[in-house]
Length: 363
View (cartoon, rainbow, N blue to C red):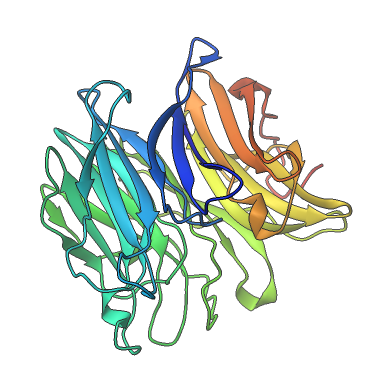
């Protein structure tokens, strides 16, 4: 399922949230989830998730109703007829503060959807920090709970359902401004203390707007992320064989060379056993590129596959990648034509890993 925002018309500052479904190689006729004063943010985008019984839950952002209020709210809606009609559920957060709430991840959770979001209520006095919160969403929205009380302010979250329970990935923020990828994991109904997927030691005093990505199959899990620790921009991936309980040492997916420099905006899917496909953006002569690479947990890598050229500026957005059977579907914003582009390729067409574990990034 693909979601996107489009202007209602050329006059009003309003948008509509649209959704379409890919089935049998064909996109369905788009339907509208909602329209109005939706916050159109290049990094904080709406999404839809499917519950185990087929019920759909969507989210988007709206500005508070109070005149002159800052920040924005997360809004949830539910559809029980495949997306033909939607019922607004309201906010997962109940603090009522005019602060930022966003960067939502939605995943199926049995008879409900589990929602994660970044919550800025503690910043209302200008001194607090952003937290990561969650709530279960069924016919109504359940109680909130705090996963981590100090996280990066505007790096996107990512979540998956493993055979042991849900795992959420996000960029943490320590008291001395280290902002590395962390994960939270729920086992038998209890959230364990969050832990780093890896400590890069990236110290940065502002949010890089570049969150991690996560994928899982059973107990196998992978987290991919961007870092600029030690002033070296890199894309990395770390594998876990115990549903995020522990992680192996990270593998370099991309680093600067004579032809390009990674700028992040990563995504990841698991492919054949022990292998993942990572997508990311890199800058180079003539603009930015959307790239994909196969990486194996034995530290071997395939050649880099170039998918498209796109804008490196914020308007280029965050490309997304999903599995569709034996294929991989990538979607991104084409700023030149003001539309969403989609590329579908067979997963086996992403170059295989080589025998050389020390191989330099390919073209």
